[in-house]
Length: 600
Image (cartoon, rainbow, N blue to C red; front, side, top):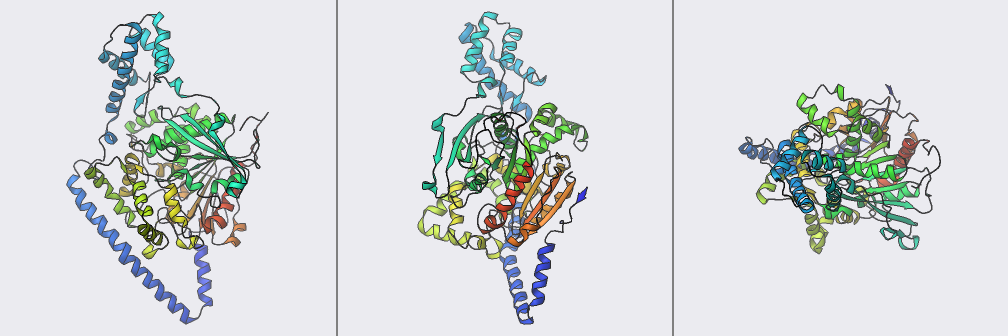
């Protein structure tokens, strides 16, 4: 392993700079600064540290009453805790009912629903068919085999049975249309409208493996790219409780347009139930769902539609987590025989979840690089008041019978009433006792309405399954684990990340949700070349050097940046965007179509 000379201990360069500044100051100024720092620490302890300790203490005490049912408190949803056998039984019963009606409609014979269900469960157990999330989708061949060989239905009825199954959309073949989007599904924004440039925004739609409809958008500068070129494709994935508008907040605060202006094909990913997928809200959606189905579906669609052009994944917060975890999953298949730290039962579950080896290798060829912005590997529940307060949602969701965490509704209340809106704006533009976990107000001093506009345009309610998975990660502090029987800890298995795929991490020095402590995980990655750069001003940009080595991991620590400041504001504009663009170029390197160009 080669470690770059640019690698320094976290905060070392900033600490040295501050030390030099203190040496140049007089004794009076030094005393004043020490007094100010002491007062600041005292206020933080009083308003943040002590309440955090107290709320954690009360949560632990209350949860002891329910420890016999689940250590984290009462289950928020029975469905979230159902076993694999229960999932199979529910899915088989649902499909059996549909098949019963199809067979009766076509043949006039009433087959036993119990018999159909029993055959489906048997085929699931023998892996002749498979469960995708919470449903069973048959292929045409599997349906014909079931009808002809298991139920002995006459050959003459099979075409009508298949046709009826296609009409009812219970066959996998019906869920992968390859049609081009119609012209009316695209819009054009002209420079006269936005004051910036001419952009085409196209909305695509595909179906996940378990049959969920998923839409996403492509934004491209009409002056910077041409159909069939070899310019980079980038996929932007938002964080929890957020939609893809966080990358396109306004014409002058848009990471998506910044990349588009530099010649990238930009794809905006919205998890199910958010943004352009708001109608598909799924209360049982988890992070695993987004990793296994949603983001993977978008990646495969882009790769297929662009005729084999790979992509760079860029994710903020949870978006970065799912981007890395998706690639890690494909790498785990490659090293499956080395996962001896898992029990046999865990390995059996994981074996059913991961794609086959050949498919995994094909998926890895779609990814040119991964860039994350403030994507945490773990949480410390005693580090900020937000975390223990969030844990109480575990009990409140039971008491109030919530289907989701009503974040969007809370934002509406905080931003629509005039007096309340002024109070909200004052809150997000202050940072008393470091209670502001989203922004460092100094980054938005030129436009103090920007944080509230972000909440209004980008905030989304959180599915109960997704929230529950985050609560478990906050509670145990051991990293991020899958919710299924594999209990796979993504944070602890990054040793198996594909080393040929470069990774670039951007961290905010003032980020309270993904603090610089996460840098300790960087030593676990298998990449040959590792670098850490600390950037405090535009003068430091030239010191950041990305290697031509494919097997590289780069950590960039941005001074003064909070969690959302990595997306827009002064830090993002002056420091993050220039470096992120260079990271995309480094990941893309010299890729081009090997032969004749295809439509992008």
